[in-house]
Image (cartoon, rainbow, N blue to C red; front, top):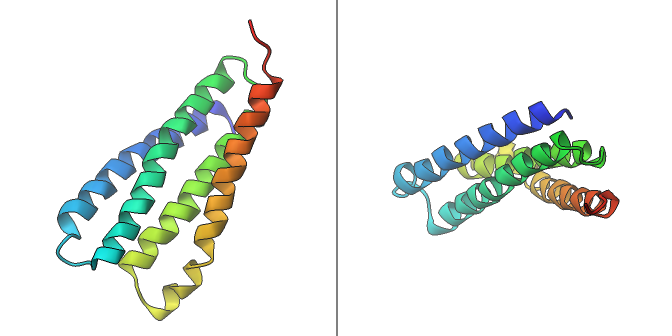
Length: 129
């Protein structure tokens, strides 16, 4: 994935995380159970943590970082979408049709782990100056 796209998606994910966090705190507090609200907050936390990581990944790539950072950016983007996105959908649409999303959440977590692994590989490939 090009650095420009990683930057854009990371910025959008950061923006959405703040909006979704506020929505959860103010709009869903009276509607959701404590457990559902905690799940929502977990989705927001993971999204908010990984959005800046995407920005750093893109900047590193733009400044001569190894190509594996493109894969890291893609994995972070997919991981946030599937991990946090599936949590949001499960909380909002707690119906029988949304039950298939349960197994999607750990796949998103695996994508995030793989993204971090790519960052470690990139660090090993980078020469000290």
